Length: 369
Image (cartoon, rainbow, N blue to C red; front, side, top):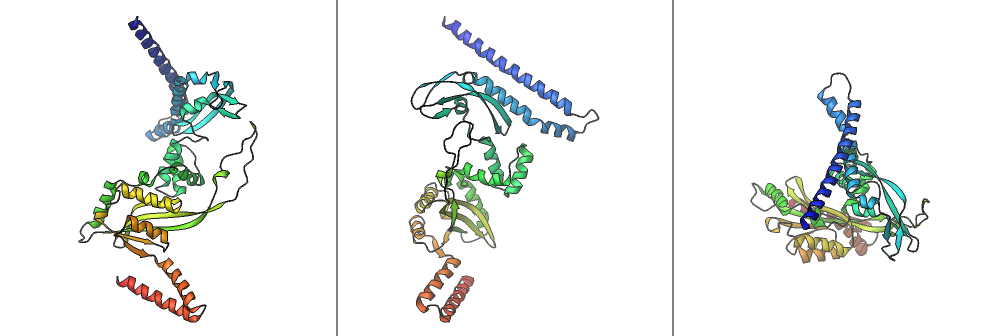
């Protein structure tokens, strides 16, 4: 009896597999018809064949993906009832809602049932949840691929290359907004090069030198206007009616930038950098992560920290890198000198003379050292 049940399950699985293959073959036949229609009847060059197939690649790959989704999730597509996640009421399916999503394999379109609880005022698309779809048309693979380009070349160049390679049009402004979306929740260790890669760069700079190379840790910050969390998304509204956005005013927050660089004569070798809008303790926690992960080969370099005179910065530096050479950057030093001169001499010509003379001496010290 058990053997019979197992054999029946195998038969059913085989039938489903054959049905899927049949549907995929039908999709491929339709694509071949479109390909034959677009190929010119005259003698063809390899470039013409390649360009024609390349132009039709997404309709094929998108239809394959859509067929697999429809076949794999037939139960979700035909679902007629669902329990509310909040009040556990049994909800009945409403009419199918069509949706189109953009992926690297093309635009995929499908219909799925919608469930809404009037008591809790919330709605759900179970198929979207099973597929792990994100809000909006673009799915996760598209922003990730776009960001891979945008982090290597300028936004306009990245947008042009991405459209040429993927067939998906993304503006340079959109490229700019995709980076923080993809990077949200990532830690500095996750985006940092591996220790092996950093050691390789250090070894290249140290080659042929008697002393260890200098690793510069530069830190600075600037206040930028930002959109608060209350301004994101829309207010709840009736179906098929545009909901009004909440009124809000921008908030000024400090964007702190941290960068590790190697000095190679007249050249600067980039090692690690990350700009982020964060608070003082969050920056200290990020440094601690780098320290705990042993990303930086501190024994192979001479560490020099360059930043402004903020007390909280030097506290973190002293706690995490006590043996580093601490340097106050020139611009903040000059700013502080003007404050000292004003406190000592007031708004006088003597104060200006003292500042100019002190900056000259500092410049000579920097040149000789």
